[in-house]
Amino acid sequence: MDYDNVGLLIGDPAAEVDKILTCLDMTPDVAHEAVRIGADLIVAHHPLIFPKITRINADTEQGRIIYTLIQHNVGLIAAHTNLDAARNGVSFVLADRIGLENIDFLEPAEPEGSDEDTGMGAIGTLAGDGLSQEAFLQRLGDALSLEAIRFSGTAERITKVAVCGGAGVFLAEKAIESGAQAFVTGDIKYHDYFTEAESFLLADVGHYESEVPIVETLRDRISEAFGALEVVATGVNTNAMKIFIPEHPQQSQPTE
Image 1 (tube, rainbow, N blue to C red):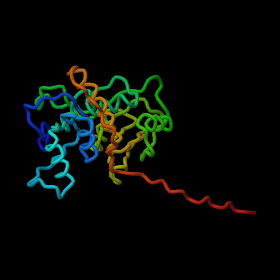
Image 2: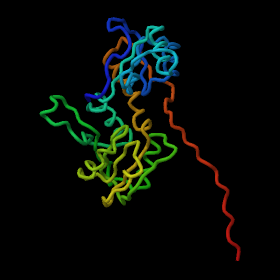
Image 3: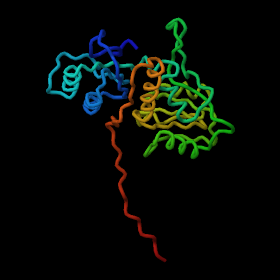
Image 4: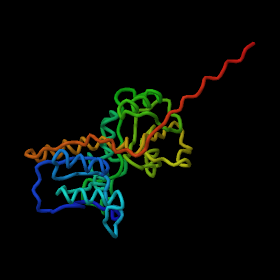
């Protein structure tokens, strides 16, 4: 996308690379992990420098990360909306993780706008007769190791599912038009949960949770393409959002 900032953000294009670390977010812990394991390059999904910056100093977390990478000769590549829009990219990996088959783009790019096989979101089918709503939500929880799922709507039987990794609620209408009984994404705002569609489930699994499967996929794809390199997926959970589930005292039962 023209607003994005992808490619080599930090480092020397001519530097030799022997070891790569893949991650979703570029955080201080990931930077220290890269230094500790001796990585020469980090491949991240979310750009560290976004939007443009006017200064680099150690007064900010971003500045300290940049300092650390430069001081230890660690490069940084970001693959963001280009990875979102790629076949077998973020949304395809999410679709595969939750067990969809016959996966294709939910919204293919316009032919006159791109000569590549690109698009946004993904759509596929569940095997057999599909799943009930409860079973499908359980499938999401198991596949993505979720603590909670926010959702709206009702679908008695789900056979066709659309997904978009990250903040993809803008594709909800497209999912409905495509005949999906469920749409899975993250970062849904309150008013976007309201839908007039019948037999349609809108599920918010979280931004991080919907995209983090791409980290291992990046590791595997880079390893396949460059067999001489050692490629490691980060062991750091970079999700800044935490969930607290309070314990409520049991209400006393009325006595007769």
